[in-house]
Structure formats: structure tokens, C-alpha cells
Length: 295
Image (cartoon, rainbow, N blue to C red; front, side, top):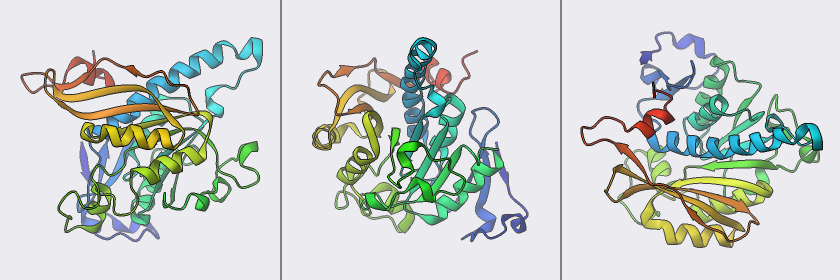
């Protein structure tokens, strides 16, 4: 459901580029909604697939950690920190907040405008003390400091100003800077093409902020799989799980989901392929389950 916002005055100091184009969209997870500007891109199913992919592994780790917490004093998952690189509209942190018990989720993007909208979304959903957004350029990893995030409760590892986290999700630009026709819309162009940070920048940034054994969850295009694997390994992020996603079963894959581990061992696993649509155009049972509509 989409609701056009009719009272721009409620935005206080938010500098909107086109107030009449801001919409509040239900994301389909809990009662959460998101603010999106129709002049620019809205989030796609690849973001939903990535968030669910990450949540599955995070929750599995949570189950294991909590099972040993009484006997061994293990850390519960709510003490963990996740970072979403290139967060755009900020939907992935919202979905992770719904699907997991992660205590702190940070969305980072180079576009200040999207960060402002995302902060408003978090606030409207009652997540301002759990989901945070900030402007960040992945080409400058030293610029990230969790202690500078307003309201962020720092962990001991971040007291000295160093940014560390346990999980990273990333939906980067899919196309090389010279591989496709530039978009007339500069913001959309940045989201599509590697003009303000390429795959290498995103992977190296993730590696720098991840704890040893931390996990990176990435969605990308299958045609760049060799580049992706090489770049991940060079950044000390060892690919561990791969899942291909096609529009319909039997068709060539449209997306690839990859889980990598910081300083992990070499033991790659290919998961069951995922199809988005049935032959009749309806979502498959797997997709309905991801959207929590399998009833």
C-alpha cells in the first residue's frame, strides 16, 4: 500500500527535493513502512532477497549462541552489530530489524538525501534506538566511526573510535562505470554503476570493519561471479555459501547471493537455487515464505 504524504510541514528540517513525490510504502514485514522518493529508485526484490538470506544465517548463529549462553556465557545475538553498505532507501536494516534480534543495525550510504529519508523511516517505525543511518563513502573506510552516530550505544570494541561489526550486508552497484549507458538521473546512476565506489571498494570496506569470523552477505549479478570471488578472496573474505536466483525455475540466474567469512577457511557450498515466479506469474512458495505470506 502506498500513501502520498500531504503535509510537507511535518518534515521539519528535512530538505526534500520533491515533497509531492515522497510516499510512505508498507514493506510487508510487520507494520514497518518506508519513505521513498518517486523521482529516484525504489528498493527492489534483490534487497528483500539479500535481507532474508542474511537473516537466515544470522538467526542460525543466534540459536547456536543462545544454546550455549547458559553453560558458557556466550554472547546473545542482541549484542551484535550489523552494517548495511549502500543502504539506499534503508529497507534492508528495516527487514533485518523485523527478522532478527540484532541489537544495532547501521545503514550507510553516500547520498545524504537518502540517509535523511531513512532516518525518518526508522523514527516513524519506532526504531530510532536500534536502526541508525549515516553518510559514508566506502572509498574512505577511516571516515566511519560508530561513536559519532547519534544515539548509538557503543560496544567496548568501539570506545576508542574504531568501527567494528559482526555482520555486513551489501547490495552494491551491479555495473562497471564504463559498462552501461549513464543514467540522466545522477543519483540513480550512482546506484547502478560503479562511479562512486566499485566492488573492490565495498569488499575492502566490509573486510576492514568486520571482526575476524564476521560475515558478509552480498547480492550481485551472476555474470560478474569470477570478479566477485576474486575480489572477496583478495579482501580476506572467503566465499562460503552461494545461491543463484532466477526469475523462473530452469531459467538462467538473475541474481547471486553470496555469504563470505572474514579470514574463513576454503569450503564453498552451493545452495538450492531459488526461483521468484511460477509459470503463471505468481510468486513461488519460497518467495511467499520470504515475504511471510506462506499461509
